[in-house]
Length: 425
Ligand SMILES: [Zn+2]
Image 1 (cartoon, rainbow, N blue to C red):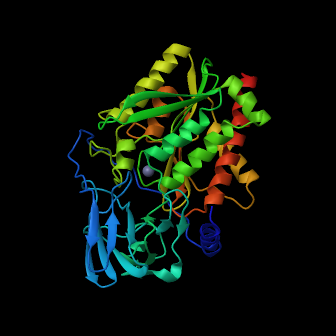
Image 2: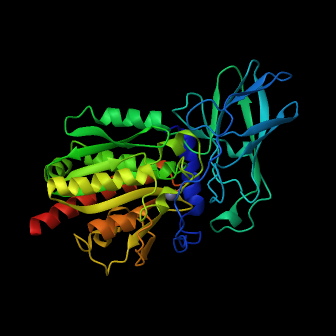
Image 3: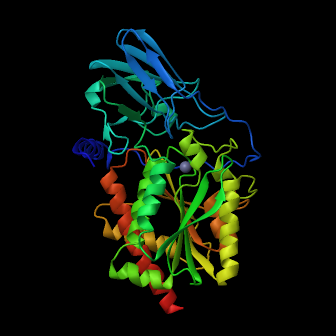
């Protein structure tokens, strides 16, 4: 991580933690139809301004820039819109910009009606290493009037001051993690002989739904990990990566765990959405995390078929299921602890271990006992498989080092608890 990024997040932690109101979590899950609906694809290409020599581009996977106009010599207004509506406020943006001569420009980010600016701008010169925009170069308009979470806390639009020149500058809402980068990560893991990759299905646009298995794939003891149903939720994805890398590591604990358990991971549930720069949905125009009862979409169906096939093949059970997301602030959406699955109390014991092992940390937990119709992945994991399940939500601005620490500690404590459970059986 670049030091400026780290500094920003350290700044945000010192400003926020302990002082701000606790995030109360989302309201009840709305049950919606999940039959496919049309989505609007963005025009792809270069937006060139001949008087200034400035070029904006959305020609890359994960880009989102729907239009841009020039206000004056050095100011541009970008329009960012969603794939369809209704949609929640997760307005993803990502574009490249350059010009023949060095110059400083202002870019105003605007969104469709009723949508406000959410993701603090990140910059990169190679599309891989990112830093946050200097706060002196960031201006909010019609800022939110509350310090709480959600739409009322957001500005209507923002202005970014950027230094540009012949080298490409990347600008995005979070660190770009498109399917190409996710697949490189998968390929780096499968160098190890105990990790394999397979395709469990294809998205509507034909992208592979890749699944990695870690450890003993003949074991009857299984755990399921998914992430990125929602494209912009990069912080959840980063936590998932650190979690999986810990289970895949060379530690004694991880080796022992891999002998006893098979871990199955779908790191990128929505590759079409991610590569199209969608805000929330897949190519079917659907929030995948509302489709775990009806399974109308190929991505959710592939995971269901995979899990059910594996249970039959191994005559085994999923003991744990976790789905990584991002939201306004860190929160754990759990199954009410009075409901017992295949390894009762696992999740509440695990969250206690997180509290014990991370100094000064008090996990924000929101339990739920309304699990039918299953609708979301957590409910499907629990109701159909008996897997102790939760949604692991990471804040948009959670410091990257801290989200890693939570994920690494979380994976280690989970492995210890699960090994203890099967020993006692
Ligand atoms: Zn989400």
